[in-house]
Image (cartoon, rainbow over all chains, first blue to last red; front, top):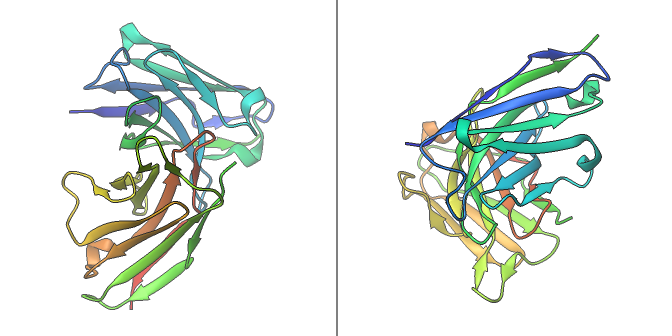
Length: 122
Length: 113
């Protein structure tokens, strides 16, 4: 049974760095074809893909946010960490992590965490 | 970036009637080497994460009722709910995973008429 759970601060100040952790179970990030992605959703708005990390270390970022994002993994802890620098109020919203399957370093999100709501305010 | 455009933005359908949501990509998401369309559909209810309904444009995820069906190829896709149930009230998103950045449509809100 695959589960994912996001954790991190609920409130960050403008210009600060956001660090979110995705802790997962039921799969290994060393398994061929598997990945973990991050997606966010501003209140009342659509989903926006941010970044992903594959089993072989391949990392991809949203071009519009690439300079601010970093995604890493801790295989021994079954965690994927997303870091976003220079937070702004427009970055507020719910951040989801999700399991990727499909093979060939592409795929779709078949399992999602419940999401964590981040507010950006001084 | 591949832009995904859904239509309509919202629709109201009577219980038991058919609901049809369209999704158009700004470029083809059909990979010729394997003849697969890199297109997924998700359902999102208020306060919940998205739920995968359809992948590879027409493959239904395990456990998803067979009233949900996906069709289309290339740049034009459709999600059909053959007989709308009260539990289907939600926002539906299409997403391409043909290349990064992966992109979602703006969402279609489905309500009961």
